[in-house]
Image 1: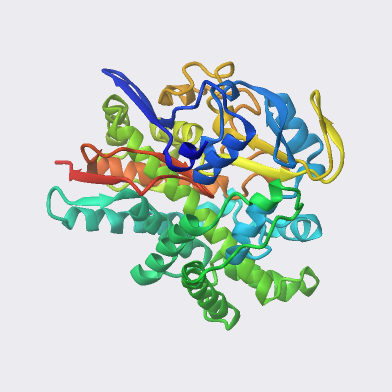
Image 2: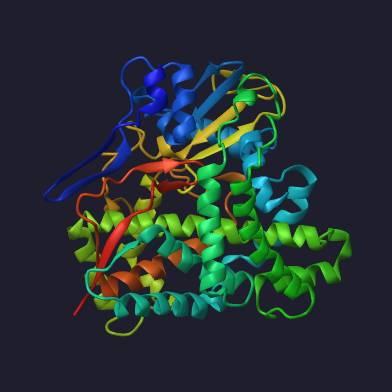
Amino acid sequence: MVQMLWTRQRIREERGPDWFVPAHPAPPTGRFGALERLLSARRSLIGAFHEADYVSGCGSMRVLGRRVILVNSPETIKYAMVTNHENYERKSPQLRRALRPIVGDGLFISDGETWKRRRPLVADIIHKDTIPRSGRSMEAAVADMADRWQARPAGTVFNALPEMAGLTAEIIARAVFGQKLGAGAAHDIVSGFSRFQRLVDSVNIPYFLGADDGWPLVRGPRLRKAVANISRVIDKVVADHIAGRGDHNSMLEALVHRQARSPQLGLDVGALREEAATIFMAGHEGSAATLTWALYLLANAPWVEEAVQREVETVVGDRRPTLDDIRNLAWCRAVIEETLRLYPSIPIMARQARSADRIGDVAVEANDLVLVVSWLLHRANDLWDRPRHFLPERFLEGKRPPPYTYIPFGVGPRICPGLAFGMAETVLCLASLVQRFRIRVVDGHRVEPSCRLSLRPLGGLPMIATARA
């Protein structure tokens, strides 16, 4: 037991001449009790699962004083997240306490009347029909970054995670705020959120001992500084918009105008700041992680990279990829979708049951912790062929997984409202980077997936980008 507090979980990565099993924690096959799971989860949330969990089903266990319900089959996910979603809409106390310092009562963690009032507004301004007006911003941001890479000396090593985070932060800033962040502000947000994830405790022990709302988050000086760096940038941009200095075509400006026309919506300065922070943080973090994992996967599957490059050459030629090309970039989209299957940015959706219920054959009590785990669902041995292999072909030629077996953006009324924006952004960025560079992981680097709040490669991902002729 003591050894588990100090020993990192073994990471498995396998490859052959035309196949690749990307990095994942090797799940234990022997005894793995509730306390062991809890200790593993404190290091990384995806390390809390046994080999027997990688199959669809629904079950329960008691972790100290808290019942945990694992909802992991298509029919039970549909019931909990769609049919009776109101009983399971409340995010877990751990997630609420962890994210509240940054997003307040924003859409991602709010529930009840606040969520019902704000959800239609936010969904409307980031609807897929609004994506075309962001196309030029996406194209310009990725072209700017590619030009910077091109200017570097050959063989320069860079950390792909902050690079992708800076890129997606700039894209979402131009779309949400209508203005460039600039290198300094982007760095403050990206580095601040990285430090925040390292410092925040994503597992609240008192919650498992019976405190239904957990204990408050302890904010040490380093955590307060990380939050302050993020808030300073967002607060300034919100203040600029309220003062009339914002871009009239931005998403935030649309929210400001909605409040001016309909004061009863209650979108005061605090609410505007919360929703702007929520859209920005969720919008840049998920896409950054997805692009980072996609680069890692292509670097280790050159036969897939070659297919993607051929497609980009055929569809785009020598010009820069645009938003209009996305519909014809089937391989690029398939790579992103398979990346989201293997590495969903939010691999665990945790809910707190409002009242007693029954999910499948499992009785649920009020305040039970209900987990829908896409990390397990997407790798379930009975739902997927070769579930741990990187196979973008699963999503080519119109192939789609059966309903409720693939949920990288969530499912039901609380599905991510920005999924269309995120897909367009990541496909465009991937095509643009593959067109201009051959990207490889630095030799000898040990890739380790880790989840504190979102699923990232632990310590980042050192890579080298070689310009194509």
